[in-house]
Length: 242
Image (cartoon, rainbow, N blue to C red; front, top):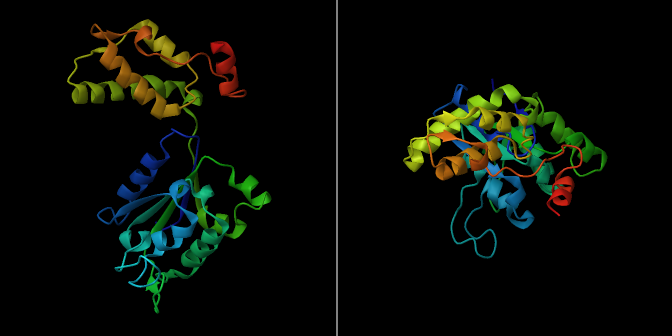
């Protein structure tokens, strides 16, 4: 469908991967998939970044410039960490989603916004609405369909299959020939809390493949952090390190 999708989950759970998969299974998989890191946008440049601008629109606008909506025309616009958008940009984005039209900075005519919106965040947007940091009407528009991605620590059955997948990739990219994981390594991976989720697991396996002296990966090859608590976070890690 063309419904807007909101993907919720902690950092490192694979929200962008899911967004790409949704696009690939859509009716427009051959159209662009454009990712926007909302946390990296400068508020003063956000409007031009999204909608583009025409030559002479402001000082330094020496040429016409396409924005994200034009780049994603017919395809998917992925708004990563959408909770970081300024309130002004949220209002402009709401108008585009409602009216399916936008106007480049300095232009005299609107353009059609033919894009499918997928947004993602690790933030509680309902709390942000209460704190007046996020528009409720925009949230309603973005959450036509919601996908909640669980943290890796809640899916222990996924850890070893993912680790095997990353081992195969690492072998290929690093020109190694590591065959698998020892029983003690599997136990270490399945009992670790993975505060960085799938991304941390991928990096841990890549490092282990580089460090492994033999054909099997052992616990010492992974360089995992000290015990992590999902309730107290890194504070407990720091205390243990001290």
